[in-house]
Image 1 (cartoon, rainbow, N blue to C red):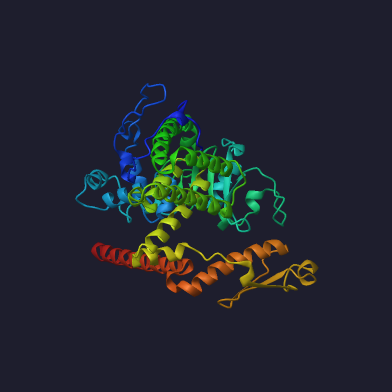
Image 2: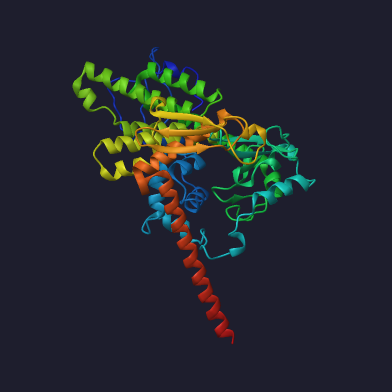
Length: 464
């Protein structure tokens, strides 16, 4: 998706305009294209470059099946449609994929190996990096959530602390533990909170692999990564050819420029949202142009849902995992909204939690008042407390989290969007679903603990 030119002269390939292939045609062999000089270019069929699902891929997918489709697609570097299809196979007891995954005991039961079923806290990981003299601390980076920018940022392990108050001189140790999302050794993630990965001490999804092994095998891992990136570049060419059939070469060029500008900029959530909107506009422009030429061509045009799935295949090839996941979130929202507009009540309901309301400034009432509590004169003598009201719903929030007025304004708007979402969608809102997941998780843990106590009691009775 960096939209490099992996094959020289790619933009000179002529694609017939009267072919409108559906999304899944991407997995069929494509015929050689005729170029201007009468020669025939090499046929890059998906059979040649399609990356098969390995046993390791299946294990990673199944072990992280509790994550969202977007997170799984970003984690595995695959399109959302492919992830959903593969997960269905892994949960179908009659499928070959299920037999391969479970036949040889490749996936362990939840109650087995209890010692490895607790993720090592990140503070222990940081201490190991700090005090283990065999580990080069300068090779490690920390992924942490920035609540002001509302995104995950990356910082060197040895970075000085110049933004968080306190006596701690190192930024990573000044950070609250709950805001650290992951730890990387050079380019490889060795600890990740969401996917329960620990390759420092080998707990949970680290499957016993420790940081010493990671360092020893890093060159091999790097080589495999480069080979995978080469396959992705070839796959990128094939996907762009499919997009040429829909958008035509001129609009694909615009898509490349938009993507390049986003990748090389200091992007944020708003920039990603605008980028996906412009991609959708390119699709509608192409469809409208086809309709002006031939009404039947417009009727046969690829559906927006299929186009966005094709686009997600392209996004999955991005090397920047954070940007990849952020774009896939917006793509999922477009797909869900399109399904909802198509008349599917279930799809419409599923789209509500992810799509937060865009707040219009003319619908907001904002007041600044003097703060209270700890913080000294900077808080008590200045009007840095924000009171924000959404006039159509009369939902109101207050924010005095920081000494900075501008940061408090940003945080207040983020909270207001979530609160308005909860007011409109109730249990189907983003916060409502998080609460439901927490309740379900608590019930599951309670049932598991009860089962263990019964087993322990039964075992004690047999020994007596």
